[in-house]
Image (cartoon, rainbow, N blue to C red; front, side, top):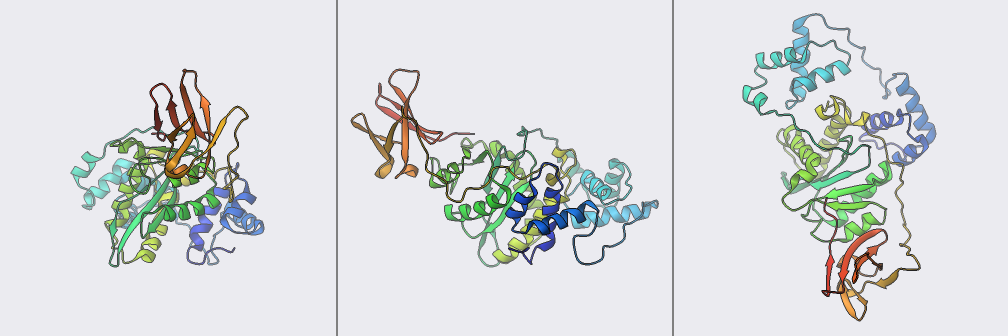
Length: 377
């Protein structure tokens, strides 16, 4: 399939940034982007030579600026394009574009002199340290950013963020928050970027408070599914911070008309966020420089789980129950029609129920109770 006409340049830029990584499997990346290897090698070669990715002539590079008024004009101009960016981001971005910049403190002074930053905003900006996973695709965070009013209807932005790189994998304008909607957009992301080792979500709709059919769909891809503890939004901290940035840089400044216009706005800003916007948590780098696609391909038709000879295998019947040892035990409605394995633990009378390699319930023959629940992040 050729490049999508609407976002050709965005796709080319994203593709070449990923293709230039030394550890990238280029043919796999071409397959995920829906282009031929010949096209992929051509654009990677042009990117290595610094040639333009469009068919038009590139503007000549600006020479280093020596005049203070010209420097101020650059700073003020970029600030006008990105009103939420502070001095560090502006200075870093202009340096990447080839301009010699003064100290960050000088850039900050320029913003204040032009009335573009308030003292209260500086005081409110506090550094924040968060745990991050050591490699891309170790963990993806996923959530909906509430309901956003539009001129025609409401928009439900679906976001998926890579924990290590802060790379925005999905930013989709959705008309509803349903399992089918999420699966459709995740399938597109998985086909392009591969699948992660683990994903986390909160406990709201459509994620639910127990194992769901969406969880099971992810688990079929070998993805470990985790959910944040109730009233602990910091578990999804990076995605929550992404939502805040989306609100400040897009939603507060651009009235949304309908889903199609909202998606165009999201696509444009996502490219800026991933490829241009300096990120303080990344040492003022950009997410695309830290991200690489997963080596694990999306499996279109995964095989059913297999169990060992020593496992006691049972079929999950209606209402999510299994029959074992003369009783019915509830393991969850998500697993209706699935085969699960019962395995003893080191404690007498206590057993664990697994779907594939995921523990989904604990059975206690001593008390006659079953504890069915999913992993909390």
